[in-house]
Image 1 (cartoon, rainbow, N blue to C red):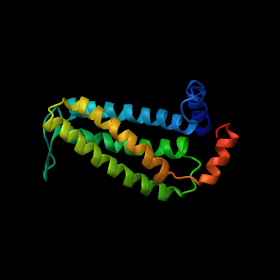
Image 2: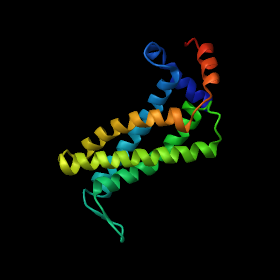
Image 3: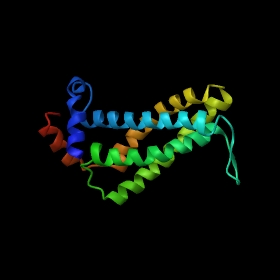
Image 4: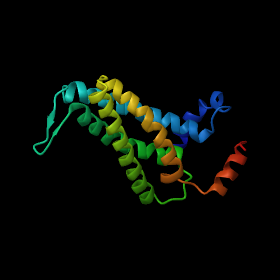
Amino acid sequence: MRKKLIAFIDFFYPPFSKIMPEQTFRYAVCGGANTLLGLLIYYIGFHYIFDKENFDTGIVVIKPHNASLFLAGCFSFSLGFILNKFLVFFDSYLRGRVQLFRYFLSFIVNLFINYFVLNILVIYLHIEAFLSQVIATVIVIIVSYVTQKYFTFRIDNSLQAETETEQGGI
């Protein structure tokens, strides 16, 4: 199944081959799908589940834009790890549990970045919550790519150079 999904994604790669490496394209496709799902869940959470009202957990009251962020994060974490591990960075030499731990760490960092940017945009700049989440997501995507490539799913540079040479790169 992994090979079929990679082949499907790679089918759309040729027009982008001059502007980005294959792995970056795969990351963009998988990350784009995960991002769209996350935004959809955020929208549904904000407008329908939390109904734009504060969410009382019994311990703490959470603003609806933050509750929606955490709800979407639960889904994005799981799907994002699976897509990155098996479709984008499958040639990583790191063990799966190490990747999962590192992915969790980078996810938490990205969640905090998202949380702070979202709250600045909503509370201080008075930008609508969903638009604020879209803006925050763009910032997080940039940070996320760098952390996934160089930390979570790091590959041996000598192996990467061989792979790129075989694929016609460098």
